[in-house]
Length: 252
Image (cartoon, rainbow, N blue to C red; front, side, top):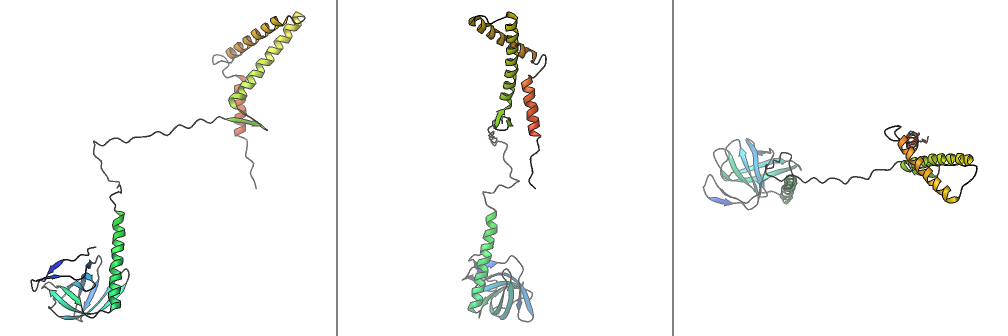
């Protein structure tokens, strides 16, 4: 869109003329009817007149009957105009003579709407937009990549009624119960063999030594070299798998 107040030289007279009103250059074709035997295309227009490219050359100071339509929004302009300048190629400027105030106001509104629509389209091509074809120089600094903080691993839990234990605590509990049962069984057999309970310092010492021996033996037996995971660990993993595969009740 080009709206400006330019000093135009008349091709016929060679004298400069300053436009009183700004002109709007049309982006689409608008045909104008000039009298009965002539016509052309509107090049630009304003509130006071239009510039045309006529089929037949125009005569200076000739009075013409104008009729043309403008789109978006659609308005029709009808009236008389006087040829202010013309050349031999059919170009010329026509000044409106008897346009009504309603038609002039419609022309002003139409040009204002075109200005707003053009400004809206131009606003999309902002200097702050980043086109996909933007090429940066090879000396540009590499982007800084910030790693997202690692989320803490979730601890699996086992639920049994109101009880809720983690897999690790559940396996430790099972292993503790197994070792405790082994210690109690060995202690009972030792008491039966000895025929009674010895003094309490000796009993406490024997109990501590027995517990250490059974704990070490349990770790050696269920190490990676022999049996692998302990009984408690295997039971915990099995219970976790069954808990995960348990079907969720659905409401019908």
